[in-house]
Length: 402
Image (cartoon, rainbow, N blue to C red; front, side, top):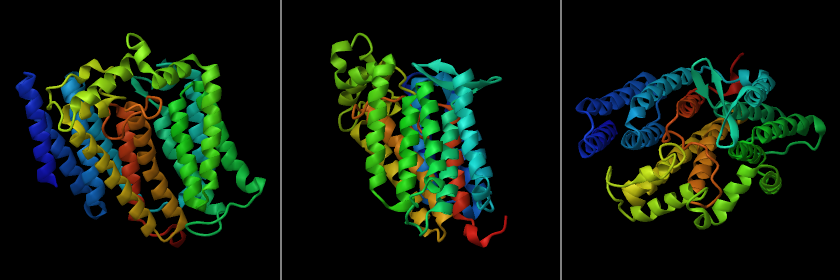
């Protein structure tokens, strides 16, 4: 695995460096990236999972090479974020017990709501949504942390209230439904006030998936889709930027010189990529605005073609499938819900952003896990990976003391 990843990183960075006449010193990015991966895997010891690490490091490598190709001035920062992310993964994987989540579930949920409320009061608006919060010199997206807190809260709550394992029924009473619906409703309300409907869609997806995983009842999925549709419909009448996004999703060609330029260029880039791509550093993904963040999947598809795009999808498939396999191997409900819920974050987020980039759904403006540029996203995703590895190596929650 290390030989393949190392060779891919070194070769990809070398091709970009030579083709675009970048400084030779930047060739060091490849060895440094490989060193970060090797150290991370070595320090994990027996906790490492070859499939999870291979998929994650592959996505990170491809994303880093494309970021270096598109925005060389951001490559050093991205490498730093990767190193910090691996460090966070190592810390999270050291988890020795997860039973504390049952005790502090309401505190975790309240912390998530508080983060969203702070964003409404003190956040910075980007692209029509108030989604960024600045603390000193550090700027981050609170929803990246909130999505993890939501999974921890729901896992702890559903573990306590769902009768059977891993599937069962949630009693039809306010005592059982009230807190979880209240937490969900407040999350959506706060995100509605932030006008960050992409994040609202992500959290709704996580909420729906967790309820289905806990109960096995498809009714929750249909109900959630219905209310999500109502929310989107209401938002189109209230927020101008939502109406604009839906309009350009339906027909970007009438507004190619204006708001439809981004998605139009993305579709041109996808078409230009063809089956095998135009070649690394040989395409023109820079014509697509935000190609290194929201549209990095399109940039990869243009230069590496359908083969490159499918390899990204396959890596996510391996990541999610292996995560769900680990979840099914847990013999306690809390462990099952935690691992499966955390894995669902990767699946839902990837589906939302890739679907928006290829015009299957309206663009929402969230990042592609491990691939897009961004510190808060990358570190949070490595945190999730570390939690999955740590929980997988813990004994069942009902056999441990607090």
